[in-house]
Image (cartoon, rainbow, N blue to C red):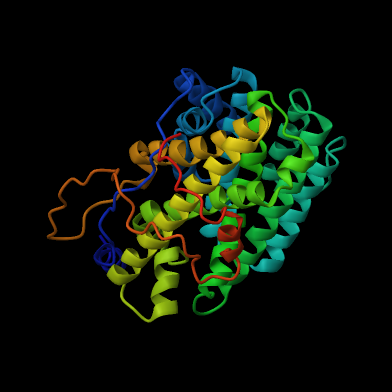
Length: 369
């Protein structure tokens, strides 16, 4: 093992349990979905390196899809699993480890957006990722209404704009501010098009006026943020070891607060749990007053948060060796109480408005799905 790898191992942090009192669920076709997706991904030849293809083949895209969307027909679920595969390949091979300039990534994401905006004719010079997403966009027309297609394309713009910002951060010395990082990562994580797929996979359609409700917009952004922060908490060790990548919530907090990783980890857990509690309280309000489609949507948002964690708990992608000379004791993946259940907003202007959507004097949400 190289000296650099030894150093990265020493910087690793212990696993911390997650607070997410949403019952688990999984679609029974998980294994079939994964076999179909891996076969499709390899035929697309998204990645040139064999080692990267093998790493992606172990990601269990079928398990991720089955746990986050345990409903719907097999065909649209398979489409969602393929979409996951393209995003993971794009993240590893084009965005994170390739360290592209913002300009280069802007060109790539612009080609991707043109492929999903106008998929009728293949564009010259398009990448394999753009071609794959173009094909998926055409297949999506089989299952989605025009309104759902519009929402998904708009969500892809949110995602691709985040990738360009992320590329600029990786090329800029130092760390972004915490407020900026929260904004860019909820976009670059790819959750916007994923949550836009939920109603397509499940076969319902939320009215536009409901989706524009500030409470629903807050719940949607909270879902993106919880998944992005949870990803940072369980993937930091892997990212640090494999790519020396320190663009994550913990290291941004180290820079923002002038503290060490252990203190930053404690702060990150408290932030994450406060947002999880807010999600439960705000979701309860909407469940008590919304229509059938809206209630289904906010229920499915919670399932995505839980399913993502269920998948990560067993995914080989995130297994890393222990630091030298350190005996790692097994720690439960789950905990029963939040580290912070305050109703006060986090001091972050970009997301403080979420707490404004809580009914004043309302009771706390029941901690169940």
